[in-house]
Image 1 (cartoon, rainbow, N blue to C red):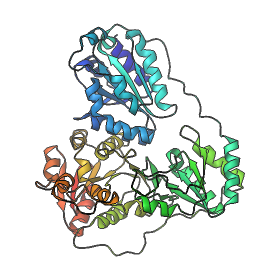
Image 2 (image 1 turned 30 degrees about the horizontal axis):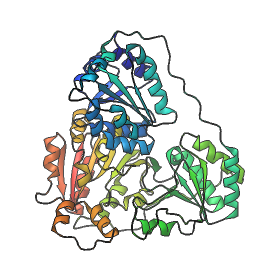
Image 3 (image 1 turned 180 degrees about the vertical axis):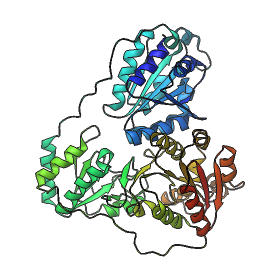
Image 4 (image 1 turned 60 degrees about the vertical axis):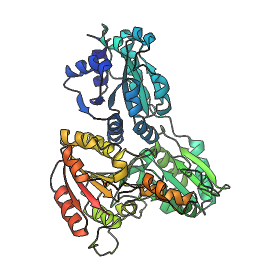
Length: 517
């Protein structure tokens, strides 16, 4: 048995059964070990951003880490953008990064790099394995760190630690500590603040507080105590749809966000952070709440958010059986027809969404209406990129489909963002994943046109246009998808889009709709 075998055995002993991989020479002993362990599902990504993004989507749907396998510092660097999104989503992840044999590092071979320095900004925990005997304790520590509290961890595996002789010491599963007890001082402080400002209190929920059972508790508090319920701008995972409490999403545009929060005197955070503007804009604030708004934390990431909401309800005297207002049926609105628009797509997808679907939303400026409409859709899980780094949508949908093979995954994808990790379509085809990708093909970085205006530039010249538009040549998503093994078709009318969506939802396997808008 060598170190690579031990590493694989420790992962399997702790129910880490999926490895998203893009390996190289330094990782070949670990690849061989994986080959000896059929219990481990190995999923190849053709780019490391697909690998880390898929691990993010998998973790969000399972609340458990997958492993990634990356090739030295450059391979890790290719995956950093989606590690950033995973870090912001608090997704558990164990990155295994191969490196040169320890005695080879002083030679400064071409792939030698500062892996620790690259990994640290996007990881909550980084450790280099010191040798074959260190593989087991290091891997156990990586697993523990990935879940206490959940987050991205990076384990560096030198080649000689992988191929060196090692023995697996008797051990069971890693024992994780329970979450800390509810902070009753914080509960009482928040309850007093809610009582003192009826109608002028907001509450932001995220993480486990955005699951259906916790949302029901938050909804009871909202109804009983006149508290407005919000979600963050970018949502890691929320359970949405008919019969579920539907928080209002804080909008991305800074003027809309500050207007929404203008009359909030007390803001309560449940697993969330205070909302701030994405960027600094001339003459606009960085904080989205008023400077005199009291911001209180009920519980943070790693706490038992459900228990904290339960304790707050008890402190406020909210009856568990109290009725909560749920979304029930779509507003009266005629089915759109004729030329396809992003609003028409949002309405169609919301109305046709299957029960228990998973929606991965990276449509960016397109389909902004979908989130509001999703409150009336069939019960589902909703996810977004959380770090502002684009290119997470296709990989996230890939990981979610592997995590939940019995559920339909819908990926709402902007054309510009999709091109960052288009290789993920190949993985979907290879694994025969049940993903419907809807590409909003406006052939431009529409969000950047808006950002130019936000910073005060109203006239866009030829040089700027060439950096913001995706025409000349226009992207052909149908050909791109088919070239990677995914069946695809194009729609430019509402009627054609509806027919393609009905067909894609009626069968299993990957399908892409290029929606010309």
